[in-house]
Length: 116
Length: 110
Image (cartoon, rainbow over all chains, first blue to last red; front, side, top):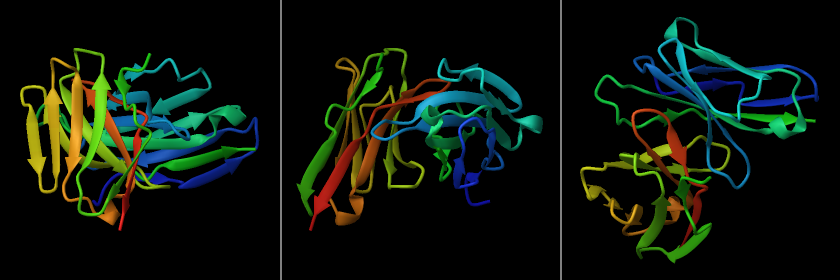
């Protein structure tokens, strides 16, 4: 296992379509995070899971966004009825709390979404 | 409400000199601080971290300093190399999510 893997790397979709992204975390990591990054901004928190439980969702995450992490392994982020404002880099990260609460999160390469 | 602020959008230094990147935070509940480096079209890469019980952590050319009373941390890179040119993000957290600053673009000129 070489790190956090995200698929696809790029996605172009028409406004109004649904899209789904996948994240495979580092295998022994029990926490998984989704962030969104737009140009000139830092990563903005969307949601995170500890094992299969979704523990927090940001106000940024509208009803059109849903994330799952079945069985506490990979995660999916779905955006329904995409809007042009959804265009961004979607980043997934994972970390382990088994050695303590304060541990670094490792990021994947991201999925670049363009809504046209 | 920006809880983590990087007030310098960009910084340019000469190869071999010191690069100092600064970060301020407002939430006194933060007790863990990290620096990430990001190249275009890639995800952030973890660089170095510091716990609030320390005021300095060093790893090779990278040193992070934490001033809790001022709610300020800085990343020193000595000596700077052209390969260090990237966007650097400061992040802060506790037992849950990390909160990121907007980043500082570092350019190291040969």
